[in-house]
Image 1 (cartoon, rainbow, N blue to C red):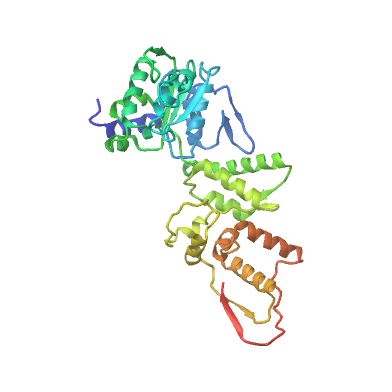
Image 2 (cartoon, helix red, strand yellow):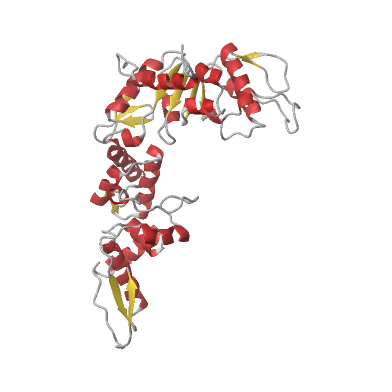
Length: 396
């Protein structure tokens, strides 16, 4: 029917985008705070794309069809699988999730199918694998394209027959398991690169389901951010709110890490802020100007290392570059305050960018500003010059 696997993968996307909505509302769906957010299981959304996804999940739940969930990392693929399970007749049985990319190659067979005692060194007892533990329920295979190819052959046979043997055993075990797989890769490309067997792709893609990335969920970003902040306020008994600048940045950022990244950024901003929450994401309206970006490195987002701070000094666009004149004899505290306030002014008040330019952590900057407020004013006082000597010019 299809000329090649890429054509089939493309057809999967068309099918996923055009599944008719369910005629009835899923029973676990209801309004969620705040605003217009709707909920299905642990999924939240208000945009048209998420409403279509909710309706599609409502149709898939009651069936036993194998589902392939496709979407970027952090978009909520496992939450989609859980929602399908909760709406199915198997909801009273186990939901077992396994990340195929996180298991060592020599242990993945044992984890999926179990092993008998003494079947290999270290097998001190009989182990029930994921298929056994999910009997009567649902097995979620996350990042299935990361599974070793030789293991995919055995998985395909189990999907076809529902029978398998433990490692080191010779007795066939039967398990009634609904399989939901997920991947963040292009399936056609994965087949072409030899990462995924073509026959396994056909078997898993009985019903493909696309999860929209956060950047395509119009209006959802701020609603989700408000919900995450409300949860933190309720948990800690606070009443923090977003600054206007934070709201603008949340709405404008592209969120490559999707909802997972958004939740972490909100949590970090909550911890590091006082009454008004700031977020340490780039100002998209200015970062789109073609400014060279520093080379990517392994680091916690928003917590710059010394290297990234140096790179930030060259890459962060400033409203206007000016000098800060500090006379010899000025106290160190006054000099530091003048430099911090001038740097904040040069990056239009962005605390995250100011911290990067200054080479300090965002928490340290917040502590300094809090101390300045305690001193009575955010304005930089006129510098006293007890000893009229040589001027020292420092570029902000």
